[in-house]
Length: 330
Image 1 (cartoon, helix red, strand yellow):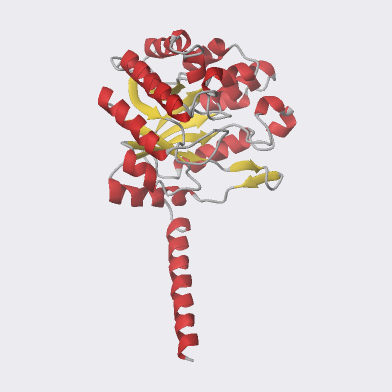
Image 2 (cartoon, rainbow, N blue to C red):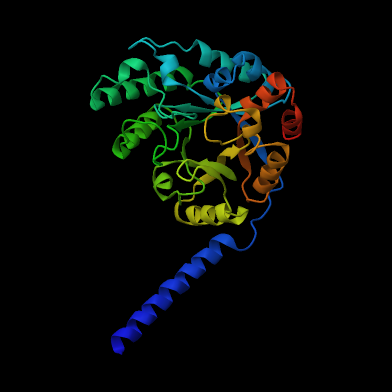
């Protein structure tokens, strides 16, 4: 009887703790910020995959929507297509055009970058041993940071993209090497290092130990290939805010939303599926819903994910509704 009683008490306390944790994360409301910063992520490569002139779409974002905060991507395979030969022409063009319009930049650098397949390596890298690959990545970081560290338009260096979150088509993952990457960047420049992490499936503890700032994802509808269907995320706004409170109390780190869903997440990349299927996970009403959701999350900085797709809808599909709605944010 004593053993059964002890087991019951243990189970009761486990259930109680679980209920309290769930109540903390899922009940209540986050404070609304009076002022918010809205930005975008821009991918030259994704714009081209959508069949767009990437320079045209980028300028439209800056000039028509008046975007003033941009997360730009220093794709390794575009910069160093040949070993040891660095070509910054396209990245330089993007940074200069942003600066001419008074925009501020978060520059993403490293091997694992935004957009599938996540690890954007030059073709010549795959044949090298991992240690040599890592040496090449360090040299890449050094070249990018040294080239752009005198540009006042750059707010922060984002080192890798969700490096501690196991997502993407990458041959290897190495936390100790990731620490070396961060140390390399911080030794070259004093601006903050931003680390991105999953807003939904992480508590950001590992990222908080390494980063000056944390950038999280905020998604509401996604496709799960394991289930073969679209899935709604039922995390409320307060879920993100309460996790941020814990991180701030322990580590005192600024947290922003680096990837707010504003495009489809279907069974394939948008350029591979029909428009009707794209619109199942993102349309004008869902776009508006996600913006209102973000406003209730307690954060003050948001980089929207999918600006290239808005321009695709406008230019290729004659559907400018999301583009026009986005204009009011900037």
